[in-house]
Amino acid sequence: MTYIHMNEDVIDNLEGFTETYGYWVTEIKKLQEKIKVTTIKSEFIQSLDIEKILGIIIPNSVTSIGVEAFIECRSLLEVVIPDSVTSIGKGAFSGCHSLLEVSIPNTVISISDSTFLECRSLREVLIPNSVTSIGKEAFALCRSLSKVVIPISVTSIGKLTFYGCSSLQEVLIPNSVKSIGESGFESCALIEVSIPNSITSIELYTFRGCLSLLKVLIPNSVTSIGGGAFQGCSSLHEVSIPNSVTKIGGWAFQACKSLLEVSIPKSVTTIEGGAFPHTTKKIRI
Image (cartoon, rainbow, N blue to C red):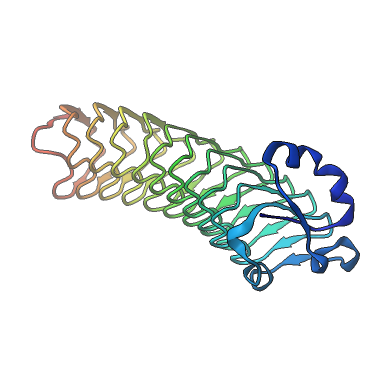
């Protein structure tokens, strides 16, 4: 078993790790602090026997974790990221199937595309209030992720960001978020969603396939509901469409078989085909 550590001083801090996990500690000479490594690159990590890497402690000399740096490190359980790190590259931890939790330091300002894509065991992630954007597929297919708290610093959530997070039951979206990309929360286990009043458009497939979703609160800042936005939300029985909405896209609420009645305000001038299931009673108000 290999525990990568990246400076000599860290040996004094490994006692807790070895007692808890029983790791054997192997020093990687290339990444000692005396060499002042500033970027962790995929080429170096992939040159190791990545199936034996169980934990990573990154030294304070590092400011950047490179693109796909730890991709497919499937045995990786834990990573310690210091405050010196300001950027984490695209796909940095993608495919780390055993990674249980990660704490992102408050020096990082954005979570890049696919950073934690398919980290199947990831149960918890702490997003600091330094982060302003969460990229495309950043947490997609993190099937063990059950709760996410998005800080008020975040202004945008990308496409497919939480797609397929089948254990994600609760998410708090602050008023700072101005956009949520297509399929942002598709196929999650969300029970209730409150969309912040900073959002003006619910994009295509945003909550499609959220089978446990019971209730949606749409603010009067929203002017359009995209096609398939809530398609297949079979438990959804309550939705209030505000009088700010002018357009409801095709298949927006299709296959929402529990949605027996919906009130459509006079502000709505366009309802595209298949927007509602045929069993839903539509009332104009």
